[in-house]
Image (cartoon, rainbow, N blue to C red):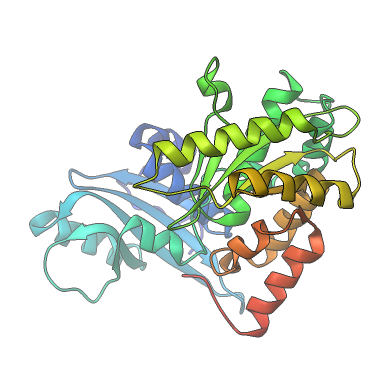
Length: 323
């Protein structure tokens, strides 16, 4: 089946140009599929949908072909029949992402439902780059890795944002360089009914959590708790991410308790090596990202690889699957 093309489809060389022109929802869908080993063959724009054709090699070595129809509004009438005919001509399973009129034998899923089948969407493939973990550690220590350009602290923010989105499988809103001049953290992680604020701290010799850090985290937490009291409530935790931390675990635990005593929002610390380990772990078990208890993980003053791996083993042992 590989290499067969519908005569009116867009060649593979133009696939990502088509995707880029179609918006962020298509980018989320395509990066999620790419991260899970789906091979793009072609893209075709119809009046009511974008058709993306993929092949997927299953565990038995069989190649399965899919046509994924991402709809604009509601797919119905002649457009729906055209999509069905194209899928049949390509000998592919049809999956409709969006809305469609009538009852169907084909799956009809919202974008959130579709990405949930993979344990959550993957907006960026950056964490799956083999060099990601090494570059994250270098940037977290304010060093510019070979092959990258820019300021290490700015790149570190970008790497942390992409990494948090990947390992949690949740929406992560980034502020940072987009809100220069404003007193806001680098971003927040939405956990469903709660949220975690975070800051990415690049420091050459490891970041030191001092009284000023405590004051800043407390101020951010109180500000967001006031602004979003009716919508999100108080932050569940404040996450600090750095290349490493200059203090011992005992000192970091004490700092966390001090912030909690004043703001009811504890600090939690995550170093680059642990994030890199988490990315590697969830690259192997991506569907478990959405069923891991992230509130329990973020309740630790210091997040270690063991904490994350234990949560994954628990979900795997209980035969829990995301989606």
